[in-house]
Every structure is written in structure tokens, then in C-alpha cells.
Amino acid sequence: MTAPTRWLGRALIVLSTASVALGASAQSITVAAAASLTDAFKAIGPLFEAARPGVGVRFNFAASGVLIQQIVQGAPVDVFASADPATMDRGVEQKVIDAGTRRDFAANAVVLIVPGTGGPAIAKLADLQGPAVRHIAIGKPATVPVGRYTRQVLEAAGLWSALQPRLVQADSVRQVLDYVARGETEAGFVYRTDAAVMADKVNVVLTAEGHAPVRYPAAVVSDSRHKAVAQDFVDYLSSAPAQAVLARLGFGRP
Image 1 (cartoon, rainbow, N blue to C red):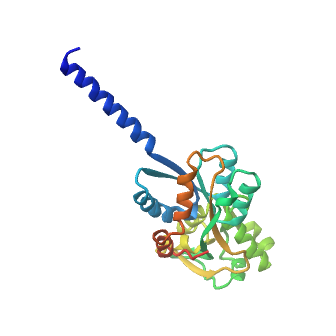
Image 2 (image 1 turned 120 degrees about the vertical axis):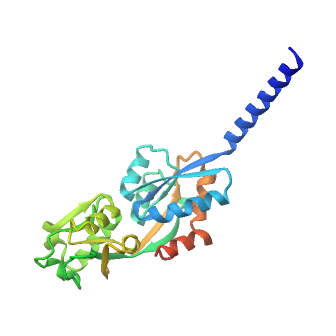
């Protein structure tokens, strides 16, 4: 082998070794998060990556109940962030969530919204029984936390049974928001933070009462292959930079 050939061979070995080392040091985690966290986590993700060089974060946003079902079925997820404690409880009970890593990191409120223009005159929950309100969008109570909170609100007001024919059940809180923003329903129940996302297309009528506190827990998934990084992300949600993003978007502290 000539000198130039030997040099080229050594160079290729060095480059190959460096590539393997780089690939080994880089880690990417998948975070399954409630739909209402979409804007917040899209802003927090880059901040976390900047604070953890070599770490990447991917997000999967959907209704909390749908996400926990996916995790139970073996979806490769590292962190789960739910819009309610009950869904996280289910994950713990089914042993797919590491209970010791669980942390509440945010709070929210449920609000009643109507279309920004042309919506009916609603001042109180009882007005939902009026003839001008034909359709009311809510999250599916079985899988969408805001739907369960909504049911609690309407049951506390004695309206749940009476309004059944008017309820349009959606797959996520963002779908509820879209229905109302497009005028496909005359009213709907979403989180305060979701209403703020489309403040130019929906109006908040009132803040609902009679439901359990809206708290957001996050935890490491038991089968995560990157538990240390996953734990870092859960912890980061309580950091000053992450809390600043959440506060800016209207979330409260847990």
C-alpha cells in the first residue's frame, strides 16, 4: 500500500469513528402531549434543545385519552404530558407511567366560547337552552379531558341531560375550537389558553365553574429508552424559561 493510500485509509477510519461517536451521543426523545399544549410545547422544545446540546425533541399532540391508549399499546414514547390528572392516573395504574417521575407543571381554566361574529347572545349557562343555540361543541368525555370537565360543569348546573340533543362531541379541544371558530356550532367549551389562540375568531362568554381543578402533569414513560433525558424534559417544564412561555400563553401555575 502506497503512502497516500495508507493516509486515505486512516482518514476514513477517523471520520467513520467520529460519525459513530456523534450518533451515539445524540439522543432524541418523543413527547406525547395534550392538544392544548401544542403552542406552548412548540415554543418550549427549542429552548430545551438549546439547553441540552445534542438532544432533540419530537412531539405528538392529541387528546390525552388517545395518547395514553397509544402508550399502553406500545407506542415508542418517552414523556407523557396530560391535560388532566385522571388520565395520568390511568397510565400509572396500567404501569406504563413511572409514577416517581410525575410532576404537575401547569394549570388552566374551562371557558364557554361563541363565534366571534354572528354568535348567539349568551350570558350564562342557562342560555344554552335557548332556541338560538342548536349545537354545542364539547370534547368526547371518554378521551378528551376538557370533555370530562365540561360534563362536570353541565351536571353541576343541572343541564347535562337537557342539552344532550345539542351536544357535538369532538376528538380534541382544538377540534372544539375549530367548530366554534368556523361557526359550525353556536357555542363550545375549551380551555382559556385555546380561546386565546383564536381570540380574533371566538369570544369568551364566561369562565366555567363546578369542575375539578385543571392541572397538567408530566411523567416519564416506563418503557422509555432515554429515561435520563426524558426526566430532564419533565424537570425543565418547571424551569423559569418554560414557565415564562406557559405564563405568556395564559397557563397558570399548578
